[in-house]
Length: 379
Image (cartoon, rainbow, N blue to C red; front, side, top):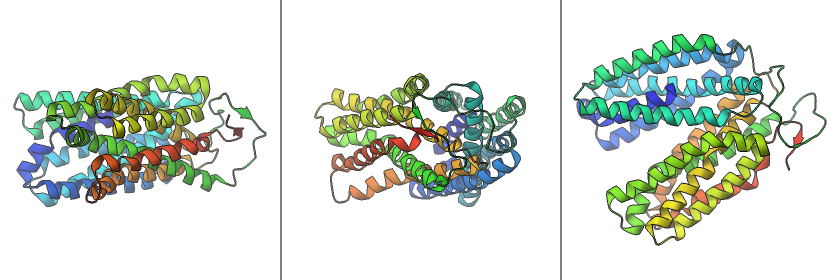
C-alpha cells in the first residue's frame, strides 16, 4: 500500500513538477523510461541482496529509499536534477517491488493459504489513496514540495513502525511447506534442475500479462475516443472500468486460487481477459466496449500474483533473485506494450493493434501450467 501511495504522489504532481523544471511532454517520456530503467536495476540488485541478508532487511532499506526519494522530484529545479531524482525514486521502488513480494511469499507460505493477490490489491488501494490525497492538496493550493515532504516523512515513519513486524528470513529456502493446492502430487525431486527454464517461463508469462495491462493503462481511453467517437469524459470510463474490476478481482482471486489452484486462476483469468479484448476489438457500442475492458481487468487481476508466488516457491536459496528476473521481464512488458501499439498505429488502425495483447494473453493461457507448484502436475 505504501508503494502504491508513493507512486501516486509522484504521478499527481507531474504537471506541477514539469512546469517548474521546464520539462516538456517529450522529455518527460524519456525521463519516465529512465525511471523505469532505474527500477529494473533496483530489482536486479535487490534480488541477490534479499537472498543474502533476508527480505525483511531489504524491505526496510528499499522502503526508506523509496519514501525519501519521492521528495526528490519535488525539490528538482531543472531537467538534470529531475532526471537524477527520478532515477533514485525508480531504483528504490524497483528494490521494494522485489523485496516486499519476496517477503509476501514467506508470509503466504506461513499463513497456509493464498493471500498474494490481496497484497497486490492493497497496492492498488494505496494508489487510489495517494491520488485522492494528492488531488485534495493540489486543490487546497499546497506547494508540491510541502506535500511530498509530508509524504516522505509519513513513509519513513510507516517503514520504521512496520518492518519489525515482518518475518525474519535468511534466504528463499524456508522449511515451511508451500501453500497446498488442489493439484495431483508427484514425488518431489531433491533438486530442481530445470529451475532456470521455469524462471524464464514465468518471466515470459509476466511479460505477456503486464504487456496487456500496460496497453489497458495507456490506450483504453484513446481507443474509446478514436474508435467510437466518445467524448473525453466518456472515454475515461474505459480505464475506469478496467481499474475497478482489476482492484475488485485482486480481493477475490485468493479464494479462487485456494479452491482451484493457481493454474486455474491463470488459465481461466487469461481466457476471460481474451474474451474482454475480443469485445473491445469487435464492439460498435460504448456499453459493450466498457464491458470488454471490465472483463479484461477482472481476468488479468489475479494472474500476476500467481506468477510471483510461483517464482518465490521454486525451492531454492535464491528465491528473491528468481523473482527479480521475473519482475524484470514483466516490467519490460509493461513498458513495451504501449510502445509497440504506438508504433503499429503508424500503419494500422488502433483497434487492429489490440490483436497484439489478445494473442499474447491467449499464449499465456496456453502456458498456464508453468505456475504449477514444484512437484505437482497441473489439472
